[in-house]
Length: 184
Image 1 (cartoon, rainbow, N blue to C red):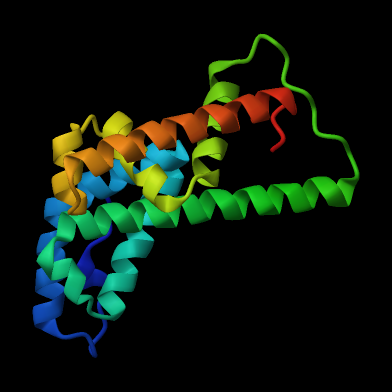
Image 2 (tube, helix red, strand yellow; image 1 turned 180 degrees about the horizontal axis):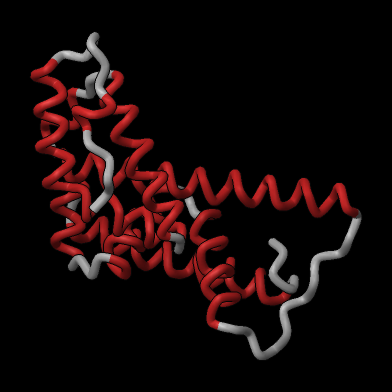
């Protein structure tokens, strides 16, 4: 578990009741939040950064949605923050590549597991957040359609349709990534 302690980062202006509530939520939902961020980013460091950033932001202000369903709120925050981090990293990487004016290397036919994972992370980052949410819950957290529906507050049929469409979009993005040599 993270070395982050909510009371340690709170300042004298923070409501002690808010700090205590947030500390309890942190202890109860740290693993889900971390695993979700890790599933999106593929990096332990990025996942830890995501969790810490999310909880530090929560400490600075109150969120009524958090108290209603903290697991769902933190899951969604972890996915959104992680997707934004990947997009930002990709934009930064592309800017550096353009500045060097070097062509991106083509991925060879015998891709390594790391290259395949990177293509997958990049493709997931291109999905809209709803599509990424259901895919991560289904495949990273191994939730059933019914569990996902309950967590997101929609019907099981809606989740089945979203999964179908999300997988189709992901396949298309991965084919595009393969045909362009990793560039999309």
